[in-house]
Length: 425
Ligand code: GLV
Ligand code: MN
Ligand code: MN
Image (tube, rainbow, N blue to C red; front, side):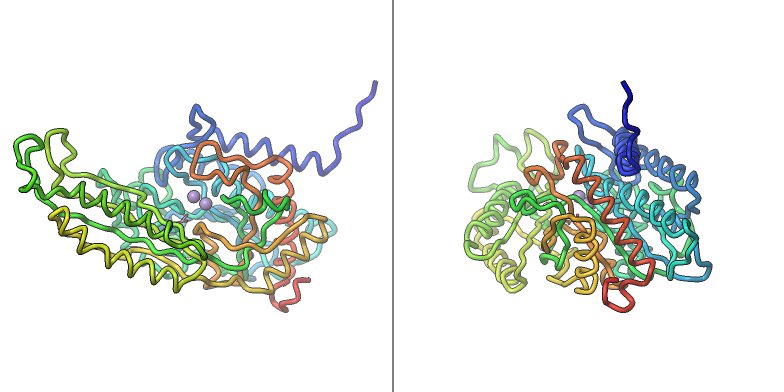
């Protein structure tokens, strides 16, 4: 019996899936996720793997002063680059797809696009480069999207480099430790593309393969410090207590109630990180630090929610005899991606016969920064049950492969100058 040899498409898909499995082994957790927070040993190992993958295929790899990793393929010396990427770092006990899928899809798509330009030999308008942005997740070092924030001039490099994790390690020393601190200035970017898992249910519910991001939800993030007074859990009479943990708990409930009270327009609210001092079983907490994260597709609603939260604070301070200090540390608005890019991506999806729809992104992505400095395109593939920042993150192989095919087509069109004219062709 003879077997039909695999088609070129099957070979491309198999190569991608094999590489994705190899990448998923770095920091792999027993429950099928990954743990490779920014600047850790696992991050260093996966970066070294990507470095080799890129250099083996003729890309030149450089690191900038914030550990952003670039792989450049220069077909037209002196011309700017179409940049495509995402991030390899993960949340603690994170999923295999968040960010890593986009970096690997960019590497494969850029390599395939280069091959398309090379045979028969034709010269694109722009070169192509792959990027692995440093610390998109913002779990070990805040804020999220750190590497692209510095690259786009939104965060001073010195501030980012001096940021510490909970153990007091700076970004600078973590980057040095994994050999990722360079002095490359970064490519001149003609256009930017990123593909990511949706991290929501809209595509799955609609039965569509591709989301083309038309705009962002707005987000506001706050660092909150609740100050009380340290005392004995047993002997301090209740009336004398200034319990920072009680104040923090009341804030957690107030933050949740903001979302519960917003019935017409979605509002997502979380208290997502908390540290308790001194965190002893026999001590009433003197201080709690917490991180508040508010998101909505309606900026006015977000303003109103922030105001409501501020109005709840005096009552909480009085009830728990504590003081609350709140500072907004990070955020972004409802902002569109260029319509010419949305159109280009939709036409590319049509050409490949992939069903698609325009979506908003609720999560932050490096493209949210990049779209402010270069024409940018953001693509989604479906997430099963919308699960993300969880070891159970999953995207079907056919969607993963379709997204990589679409990104290849998008990069090819961008390299041809497809966004210069705004026609998408
Ligand atoms: C970043 O990933 C965010 O959504 O804040
Ligand atoms: Mn991500
Ligand atoms: Mn993430």
